[in-house]
Image: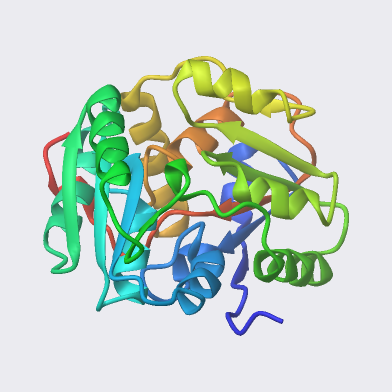
Length: 267
C-alpha cells in the first residue's frame, strides 16, 4: 500500500466553467519532494538502486522527473539531456529551477543533439551509471495503481478520469482500475500518433498555441487559486474547455510539480 496520501478536491467553480455537473481534482502536485506525475513510482525506483552514483535521463528541458529524482536522491548526480519544446516562460523557469539543484547536471538542446549525447554517454559508462527509459517512463506501477483505487473508492465509479499523456504511465495505471479514462496528448505530433494507438478516445491532436494554453491556466487560477503549468495542465484545460460533449462528472489529475511561479518570467 502507498504511504503517500491522495489529495482530492471538488471544485464547483471549475465545474461551472467547463459546463459539467462535478469536477474532482486529484492533487498529485501536493505530494512531497515537489510532487508531480511520477512521484509515487520514483520512490520505489529510488529505494531499489544499488551502487548507483549517476542517473541519466533523456527528457524535456526542465524535466519534472529530473527535479523529483534530485530531491529523492540528494547523493546521486542526475544527468538530464533536456530537449527544447517551445514552452516559453514555463520552460525557462523549469530550466532555471533545475540549474539551481546542486545534484543536477543539465544539458539543453535539440532532440537530435540530446539523443546523441545520451547514447554516446551510455556506450562509455560503467555500472555506477543508470540510464532511464526515454522520458523517465516507469510503466504502470503497483503504488500508483493503489492510489488510483483510493481515488475511485473516495469519489465513486461514475467519474471520467482525465490525464495529460506524456509517457503514458499514469494513464496505464488508471486504466488498470477503470475504463473511464481519457488521455489528453501533450507531445509532438509524431509521438501523439504513436501514443494514440493505445487510446479509445483522446483529446489534443490539434496543435494549440502556447498563448491559448497560458490563458487557460490563468482562467483556472482565478477559479482555483492555483497556478499550474501550461504545457501539461494548460493542454488539459484548453482541450476540455473546447469540448461540447463532456461527461457530467470529471476527475482531473493534476500532475505538475508544486510551487513553480513561472508567470514571473516574461511570456
